[in-house]
Length: 220
Ligand code: CDP
Ligand code: CDP
Image 1 (cartoon, rainbow, N blue to C red):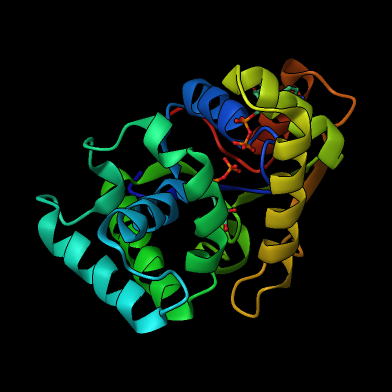
Image 2: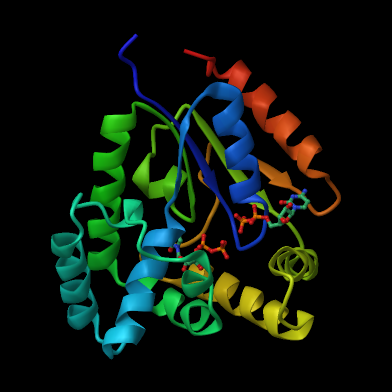
């Protein structure tokens, strides 16, 4: 059928969003989008071009310029950014300031909507996907875990960085993302919340797959 299917996955850093979304994409044949990449690209370019991240109109102007410059008109499909660049410490430090800007969030939400219209079947991860971007998504998840566990996971995953530094960044971004006035990180009312602290990836994915099946998400 021509029905659009969107699965929304939100939660704080290193809760397991990317890992589980890739598994869902594989299981149900969905396209996958990491919305945080777009905020990271804007933060990265702001640093590179000397745009102060707390200058709201300058950052929005930068975002519009980047959209114009990207051939597809869609920032996050640009392959010119390497993961190491977008996950560097300066970007981690700048990204929450960029993501507080309501007008910028509006731009990014519009880009995600455009992309999803083309894909028709997709799983999208972020902080506000179930609450703001796709409030009527048929399946929504909110993944969490204790900050200490998430910091441990991120250190192991990246293979560098000190646990203390990573934990500090995780806690700082949790606070910034949860307390911002626009599209704060909170579970959607109808999201299935999963605390992954004591669960394996396979256990989390198993739960998510069965919820998706219950909600009628199937292979096309
Ligand atoms: O992978 P990790 O969870 O560490 O971060 P990310 O998903 O790449 O997101 C980086 C930052 O972008 C977050 O800390 C948020 O400030 C922001 N973000 C957001 O505000 N809304 C989204 N839908 C996705 C990310
Ligand atoms: O996308 P997000 O920042 O939420 O997390 P991720 O990059 O998918 O996951 C961070 C790391 O935690 C990955 O190396 C996973 O293998 C690991 N992990 C997990 O995601 N879920 C568990 N239940 C256990 C470990």
